[in-house]
Length: 289
Image 1 (cartoon, rainbow, N blue to C red):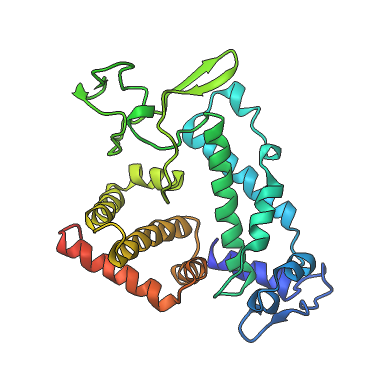
Image 2: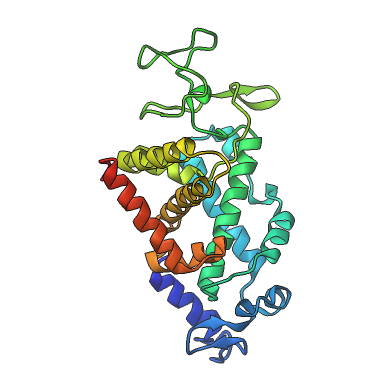
C-alpha cells in the first residue's frame, strides 16, 4: 500500500474526511500520532466491533485481487479459472486468526491492514495449493520439464536433476495434470514450513540478485549449529528479509514495513534495522553485494 493510499485510508475512516462520517473523526483516533487507541491498548474485540472499516468487505476485496494475480501469474486453464471464487476461502478461519492478532508497534489502521493483506494472501496460496492449482513449492519435482521416472532429466537443459532441487531456472513451468476429477499435482513433496511466497518466486524470476541473496541467507542458517541462538537469529533475519521484500512489493514504504515487521515479530524497529544491517554486512563478506 503506497503512502498516499495509507494517508487517504486514515483520512477517510479515522479522521472522517468527506460526508460518510459527517467529517467527524473516530472517537478512538488520536490525531497527534495517527494511532488507533484500541489497537494501541490491544483491545481487539472492541476494535473489530467499533472500527469504521467494513472488515469482511475488505477481506473479499483483497481475496479477489490476489486470486486475479494468481490466475495471471500461473496461467490457469480457463475452465478452472472460472470456477475459482473468493467464497471458497475460509473467511471465518481467517477472521478468527486476525482477531487474535495484536500489534505491538505502529498502531495505525494502515499497519493493521498490512497484516490483513498478508494473512489473506497466505490463505489464498494454501487454498490454491490444496486444489493443485499452484505448486506448494517451486522446485524441480513440480516442473513439467522433469522426466516422469528415474533417472530424472530436465528436458530443457538435458541435465540430471533431483525432484527436491530448488535452484529453479527461468524455464520452470508448473506441471498441471487435468483429469476427470479435476486438477492434480505431479508428485509434489509435502509442504515445508518456509517463509517463501509466490510473490517471492515472481521476484526471483525477475531479479536474480534477490534469489542469490535468499540462497546465501538460507545457506547461513543450514551451516549454523542446530539449536543455537545464532541459528535462530539467522532464521529470523532470513524471514524478515523475505517479508520486507513482500511488503515493499505491495507498495508499502520501507519505514512502515519495518513497523509492521517489528509488530509481527514482537521486537522493536531498531532490531529490524540491525538485522538488515547485519544481512548487508554478511552479503558483503560473501561478495554478493
